[in-house]
Length: 73
Image 1 (cartoon, rainbow, N blue to C red):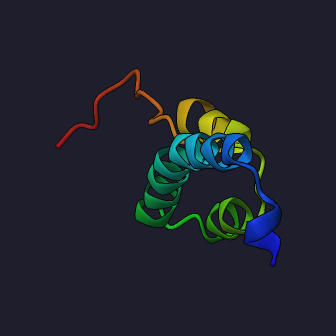
Image 2: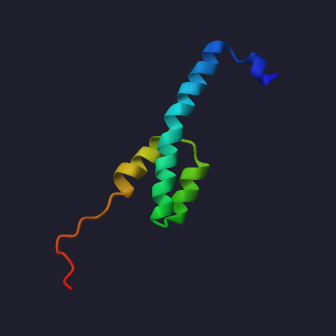
Image 3: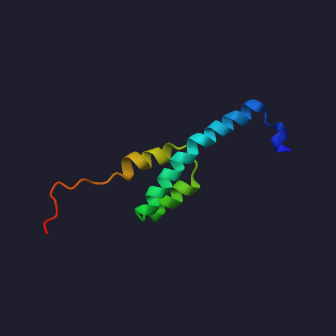
């Protein structure tokens, strides 16, 4: 019933939107899981912000902090 109400234009818009969101969400979830950041993982999984939050997480919060002094052995 609902699918019958969608026009062809709506279908293509939703498809393109899904193709935009899916890779960003996948990368952000993968990074959060690898870094053992459980709260970020849950937030990224539950909230749908059209990939805005995912992009911010990837480029701001999941960056590796560079060490100014190498560890001495």
